[in-house]
View (cartoon, helix red, strand yellow):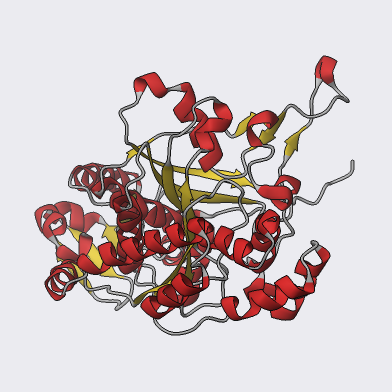
Length: 453
């Protein structure tokens, strides 16, 4: 008999109980912020028709789609289905299919896994969760402002210092206009989106390979190196893009978003927010002309968020799309959304040691000397659970050293020891596993002990 060594596919991970407690903390934190802004949850299938997925993510994105091999009579034919690459395209498909049931603007969130046939590396997985929030059915830039507020609030709650980079695809189209290469807008977008990964020289080399003229690449350099405040950059862009109608529209959209955000960040507003949560984080909002986001469906503002204290790719990203539903037969419906990368957030919180001390962990375990004591402990455990205290009973009266070792290994902070004396006195001996302190307590005292919460 050949014994196979157990393994999982590269780019995927198992999650133990501690990891799942941490992941659930991430999901519940994000979900609670989404709900504050009136978003409601939906889910879509893990697989979609290939006709739904293809052509929505750019040439490089299409290469990363996981295709599902046909079986039965269709074996050997081209794959008709694939695992979803993101949650936005399935959302657009959902909106069109269910448009008669929805109230517009429709505000939804989704927390589900996605799959990409990417090369696994730090912070990049083949299977990972996204936490998406979108508004569809309105062109109002108030939605962009609220998404920025959501980003700020989520990372404030996590205690992660972040920088939110923002650009506008209309500005990128305008840049393509003014350098004389309007037909190369997507080529420019794909190339400059890699600037922070491969550097300016390699970006210029790729632009040349994509058919841009040396003259156009030269004209592009000062644009990519604009400096100063966000207002300074917008003013410079207004001059550079003076002859591009679409470029100027992008500038004005960003100017409006900045004004909306600033109007909500008055001193009074900041103080009110600070009083709600002590885990405040630095939050920078920066106009970044090198931010392009290679997905084909973006048409307006685009966002990307990076942690300031960890070397990691973007941990949140998204943008405005004006006609994604048009592909599915419902044209002219504008939407905007962002996606939180739960797996990267997990890695950032782990590296910075920012998880709360207690996450879905058993607070007290009962250790017993015999069968009678075990039955006594089961009754107490039932009462503690009714009071909302996470409780375990060691299922057999094993040697006390073994029971204590179990509690220690699971990092259970308190052990309630039950012997004959405790049963006689209607108490337990409560041991603090961290300090070693022991004391006799009644059931009422145990339920009301603040340390049990």
